[in-house]
Length: 246
Ligand code: IPE
Ligand code: IPE
Ligand code: MG
Image 1: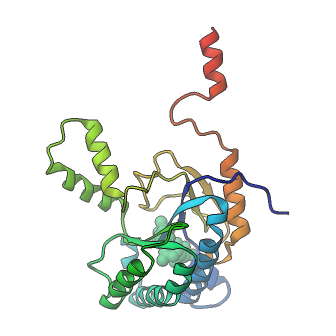
Image 2: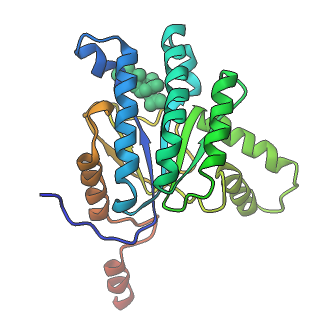
Image 3: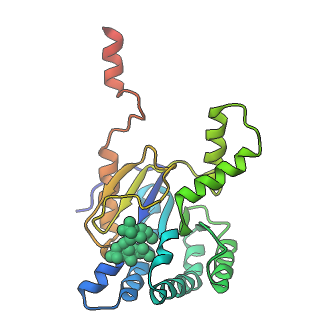
């Protein structure tokens, strides 16, 4: 039985979609077959997200460090991402999804860069889900770039520097910090994804390989998120009342 969930939330959920390679290897398949199955999982998750109160979905598809992989795997990934964008743009528009790709654009193949620009332009009017796909993305590099940008504006206070960096990292002003970070594939690390934005994210790790992740698994993660008590360095409301009475 699916659990019932509170509605009307504007959650920012980030996902490190890990485990494609192992999923394929365990089936005696080449690693790119796992990446292909991973794309299918992504499509399922995008379709399920709005009904679960997710307003912004940031997914890690290719890291700056993934260039170290064998050329054949990198090529397969670049080809797959281009094919995905070309095939999915129509369904994204119909579903009201606004696509933004975050990360570097100068190292990817030209046809993929063009496809990204087409996808972003075609989906610009989407208002049900803001989908951020991280491609050739490194959080440390993004923070360093943001710091360089704000160093030129002679900020008068530490607080302002923090705000300028946060604004510079977000692709637009509607993107807030991450509420929930999901990582599949069994590893418990961030691998250079959204380090600044995850400062107070709830973390949820799953041993499920990404190609096997589905809407029900996402629902489970969100249900668990709603049972967490977020304190942001303060005290829970009950403790505050108790302290005041003492
Ligand atoms: C995640 O799956 C996708 C990318 C990093 C591009 P992996 O390819 O890292 O899969 P595993 O971790 O080797 O199983
Ligand atoms: C993180 O997974 C990057 C993506 C999911 C795109 P990796 O498989 O590259 O991370 P590590 O190497 O296990 O830290
Ligand atoms: Mg991996």
